[in-house]
Image 1 (cartoon, helix red, strand yellow):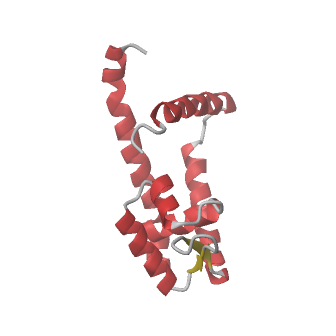
Image 2 (image 1 turned 60 degrees about the vertical axis):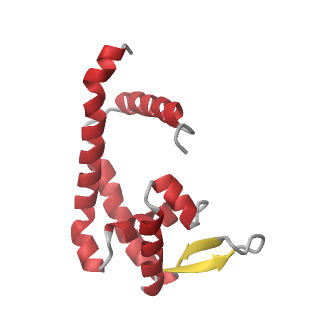
Image 3 (image 1 turned 180 degrees about the horizontal axis):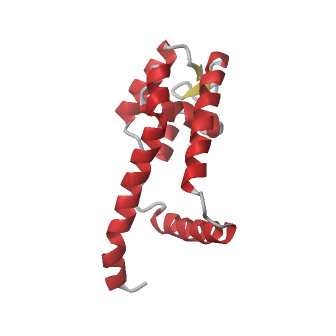
Length: 150
């Protein structure tokens, strides 16, 4: 892609990212109030549920691109609400694994349904061919920036 084309199209990524984030948060707004959960708490619960191999606060910070303080606050709050518990790593006592309490499952299931609805809205009227092309382009973009700012 030529540099002139990139400069003209730069804002589309920023605008789309902002709109995507706002729409995602709006999808959860009513349920957030009903369940007395913040959006950050919702994000942590969904992350832990959808990515069981990544179960530490530092992994949430890294992969969800959220601040350490926000994750810490959300994790503490979820623990106080009885939705998650801590497990100390046997090999490294400094490492704390975060696990969902069984009582959190109905909440997580409800949140996952909303997340599914969001992705159905997002991909509506996108053909399988278009989806594959988009995924290929996004994978290349991800590869282009992976490790650049870690």
